[in-house]
Image (tube, rainbow, N blue to C red; front, side, top):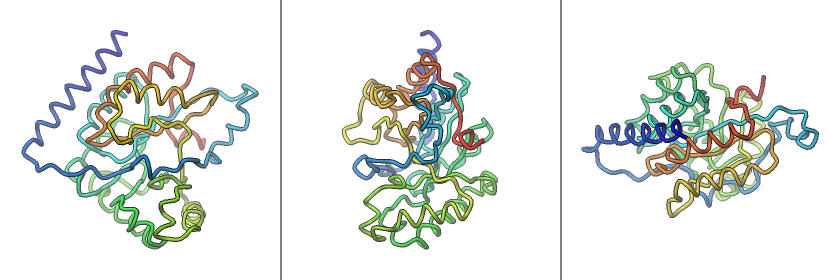
Length: 264
């Protein structure tokens, strides 16, 4: 308990300190995932171990994943992960509202976290206008990130909204996600969704206790969990809930891993 409390206090202090450094910056609207745009039924075909859930033959593993960062909350998330000795995977963006935080991807990588691709603009209308538009967006993201990290080894991505989202159909047609998944595989990418959701991108700013409850209630009997959380300026309560989420999975006997570890 003492360790979890200290981690939460450290996180709060880091958020405050980091944010003070940008206090003079103009406020910008958060760009990223919205709950209503996320796929309601995700693709878990990337986790063949799920078929052995009932047999108990598969070790219990959990991947903590964070979309839409980096943000003012990233230093606090990294501090908690480091203190708890837990790896995570960050699916990052390079939208206008988080440009000032992009250097933090270097800290993420140096700490041993996995970096995955999410989107440059995170603008559904633009990125899902066509498959060419989507891959152009990914190229733009890699170009932005290349100023801070080596992007040549990044082979994991998460589609905004998930690989079975339907909002993309408005702009690119009903088959666009099916086509993009095939193309991602052809290009050597692992396109990964999630099977546990913290629901922290919901409107109304859920409390830390709600983020925690949403997460553990979604686990059910899964032995391999890929947890969707968000790393935006608006998801401070996710940071507050993170130490308890980690403690719960640890108490339940889960081993923490990155998405890459699922493919070993």
